[in-house]
Amino acid sequence: MTPFASVPSRIPRSGIREVMDLAWQVEKTGPVIHLEVGQPDFPTPDAVIKATCRYLREGHTKYVPNAGMAPLREAAARYFERRSGVKTGPENILVTPGAVMSVSTAFMATLEPGDEVLLPDPGWPNYRMAIEVLHGVPVCYTLRPENHFLPDLDELERLVGPRTRLLLLCTPSNPTGQVYDAALMRQLMEFANRRDLYVLSDEIYGDIVFDQAHASALSCDPDGRALIISGMSKSYAMTGFRVGFTRARPEYIELAAKLQEPFVSCGSGFSQLAAAEALDGPQDGVETMRQAYKRRRDLALEVLRQYGLYHYTPGGAFYLLIDVSASGLSSRDFTVRLLQEKRVAVAPGSTFGEISTGHVRISIASAEENIREGVKRICELLRETRRN
Image: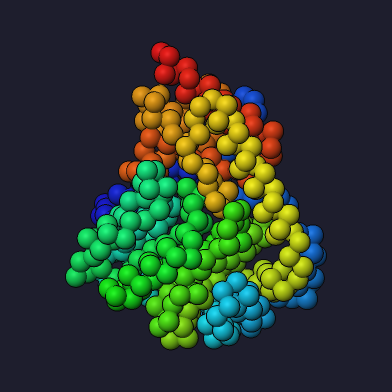
């Protein structure tokens, strides 16, 4: 029989999903501490649940416009303007089924086959998967531990070639949790302007910062080359609602809305209307979650310090890379042993790139007792493997 297409057949499966599947199997014989999934453990706010039910009963279960429903586009425009101070209208907003579709649509709208994307290493593996499926070429820039997992401008300059089309940024970062300050973001945008690159800035964790204000690429984008990604999943504990959005210049929004039709058609009306209420309503829940994540981060770091394994302090999101290279095991092998012997599920660093192959990623979107015990067990396994 004729084989399937070569590119999707050869891209690796996400290591995060692989661990999730393994954890479900192990969980059949007893409890597992889950620190592998980047999903808020808080319930979706009650007001959002009530609004969703109301919109369902009102019949908002039909097709909606490709670019999203007007109330959400208007609410998202206000959201971006509040965060950045940059004037934004509904014509600047594209709504997609989840922020991941906003990312993929950006690649579809900007890349020709063979075009290159400057991609962070370590970085979320779905970026590379989408680029390769669309016949683009990922070119990795390194976020090294010795540079606090921040990009090196000189390296970016060296990586630019005649086919470089787009620079991808993620701040706060998945998987490192690092946050780019305003000065660095300004330098990155100046670099993109000088090299005439589009900037895809994934700011889905922009509301979850601990020690400094979030600096959006939108605040230093004079000519509209930045495509800003955000959504409802992380800040509002609405991962299953599948509501993401892009802020960009109107010409991009028009093109990207057209691209929704052959792939997803549109999102769901009831989810979008509930999301609009969440964006415009009280933000107490967002702040409560942010403060909880900060406490959990500090708790994880406290345990690491007790075992002499502290290396850096993530400034946002709900992730932390832990260096397990002293175990002598690959990050995947360490992850499997940790799950089987200590019943803790984490994500192997290798799924995020070469730089993090000696690490595992934990998610602090879990109860404090899980974080304390889970990080302790990671440290214990590392101590045991080093001794052996």
